[in-house]
Image (cartoon, rainbow, N blue to C red):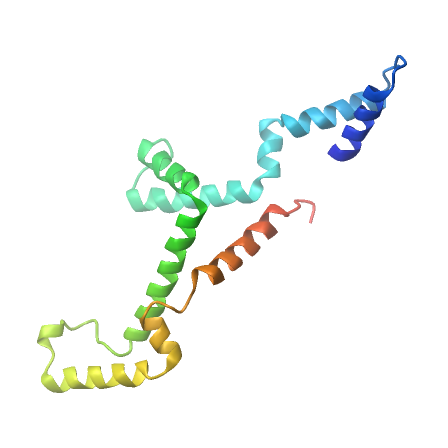
Length: 173
């Protein structure tokens, strides 16, 4: 019995004016509704396993970054800031991050990061600018360098699609 059928079952009993004899089906329907509305901690975790796994993964990453344990207030504060942030802020950060990485991938082969700009010879400097101009002549590279490889809308569609798949996740599969 699922929540919807349990609710219909209880509704049919409420709409009937004659006294009702409580059966085992009544008890099952009540338990289904109760557990759906007020699940136990174990059921709550089982029903939200993808979120729990992402929380644990994030906790590991943050604990390593800050060199702290799970009981450190800094870790909890960071995790809750991630969870509590507005959805669009996370999407904007992800879009910016993706565009920055594309820009860096474009520049990596052109500019030798091992050298400081002031230590380059005039010939090396001219070669770098020449390579950059050639690279920017390609529309895709120009868009990447200008931070337009990924649009907010593209990222939002992809993220929403992934999240919906996770939310529809069925642990029986």
